[in-house]
View (spheres, rainbow over the protein chains, first blue to last red):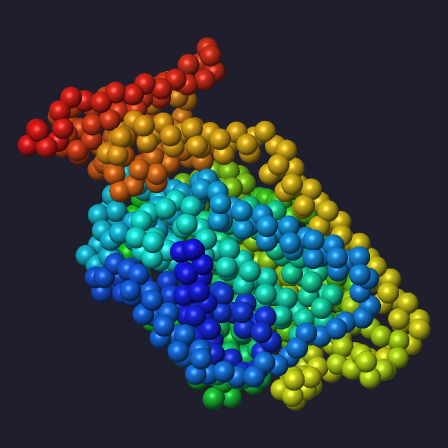
Length: 457
Length: 180
C-alpha cells in the first residue's frame, strides 16, 4: 500500500510540474513524462531539503505532493494528438509486440516489487545510499561520506536515485530492502509510454508498438530496470530530455525547453555519465535549434546551459572535500591523458561492438536500427532523424574517452561489466530512430477513414 | 519532416497524410516492411528466449538468488541485531571486486545490517576491491572490537580440498556498555 501511495505522490509531482509546461499532448505522453518527472523532481527537492538539514520525512513528501497536485488540477489543458492509426500492420505482429511488452512489464514488476535487491551495484551502491539518506540529512555531512572502508560504494556518486529510494523508506518509516526499488517500475512504465507516444505521433501505432517493445524487452533493460540501480533512471530521464529537445526544435515552445532542462539536470544528479550526456544536450540545443543565431533562441539555449551548470554546482561543492578513493575521471580526462591512450580505441570500439552484437545481451536490437536506417536512408537528413543520430554518436564520445583514461581497471574487465549498461543509455535515441524510420506509413488510396494516418518523415 | 511542414498541422491536432504511392513503389515498401518486421520478430524471439532461459531455467541464477539469501541469513544470525566483524581465511582474492566472494559478503553485510556497522579491518583504510579487503583483514581482539561496539565475529574459511567454505560464528564476552 505504501508503494501505491508513494507512486501517487510521484505522479502528483510529475503532473504538477508538467501541467503548466505542456500544451496539448496525448494522455499517454503526459503519463510518460509525469512518471519520469515525478521521481526526478521529488528527489531533487528532497535533496535540497536534506542539504538544509532536514532528512526526508513523510509530511515533507505529502506537502510537496499536495502542492504539485493542486498545480496539476489548476492547469488542465485539453488532451490532443490522439493515437494515430497506421497502415498496414499485420495483427500478428502487433500481438507479438503486446506480448513482448507484457512480458517486460511482468518481469520488471516482479524484480522491482517482489524480490530483494540482489544486483551488485544495487545493494552495494544505490540502495545502500538510499538507506543512509533516509535516516540522515545531508547537512551536517553524514559520516558515511568520509568512511573509506565503504569506498567500494563510491562515496562521491550522485544521489538522486538513492534519494528517490529514500523517499519510500521515509514514507514507511522503516528501512525495507524490497521497497527501495519500487519507484523505478513506475519510471519503466513512463519510459515505455514516452517512447510509444513520440513514435505514435509521427509514425502511427504499429511503429510505436514495435519501437516500444524493442526498447522495453532488451535483456539489458530487463536485467537492470527493476534491479534498483541508476541505469533505468538515467535512460528514462535521457529519453524524456531528447523528446523535449526534439519538440523544442519543432515548435520552439519555452515549455518544452524547460522540461528538457529539468530532465537534463536530473540526468546529471543521477549518474556521473549524466553530466557529459547533459553537456551534449546543451550542445545540441545551441547548435541544432532552428535559426541558432537568432538572438531569442540563442539566449534561451545559452541560458539553458548556464542554468544546467548552476544547478549541478551544489553537488560539485558538496563532494569537493570528500575522500577520493575510486577512479578520478575528472582529473584524468584531459587532452594529454586521452592522447596518450589513443591505442586503446580499437579495443574499446571492438569491445562495445562485441557487446552490441551479442544476441544474449541485445538480440538484434542494433541490427534492426542499422537495417531500418539503410532501408530508409533517404530520411536520414530530416531534422529529427539527423538530431537523433548526432545525439547517439556524440554520446559515444565521452564513454570512449572514459574508457581511454581508466587506470584502476583492466580494460577488458571493465568493458565486460559496463559496456552493456552504457549502451543501454543510448537505447532511447536508437528506439526513436527505429520507430521514426519504420516503414509503416503507406496506403493505397486516399479515403476518409484513413485521414491523418501515417506520417511520412 | 521539416518544422515548416509539421508545425501547422501538429498544432491543429492533426498529422499530415502519408503520400499516395503508386503500385511499384508500394511493393518496394511492403518488401521493406516485411524485412523490418521479420528482423523485429527475430530480435524479440532471441531476447525473450535468453531472458526466459536465464530467469526460469538457469541453475546459475537460481543459485545466485538462493546464495544471497543464505548469506543474508548467516549475517543476521551472527550479528544478532548489532554490528559484525567479518574474517576471511584461505580465499584467493582476485582484483575483480565483482567476482570476489569476500567482497560480496562484505558489501551484502553492510547493506542488510545497516544501520549497524560491519567491519573487515581498520575502518580508516579504504576498501575499494577484494585485494584491499584481504590485505587489511586481521584477527581483532575484543578491546578493539569494543571500540566499535561490535560483539559478533563471522569467519568464512575456504577449503581448497573440498572446494567450499565453512563458517564459524562467535561472540566476544562483555558488551560495549559494560566495558565503558
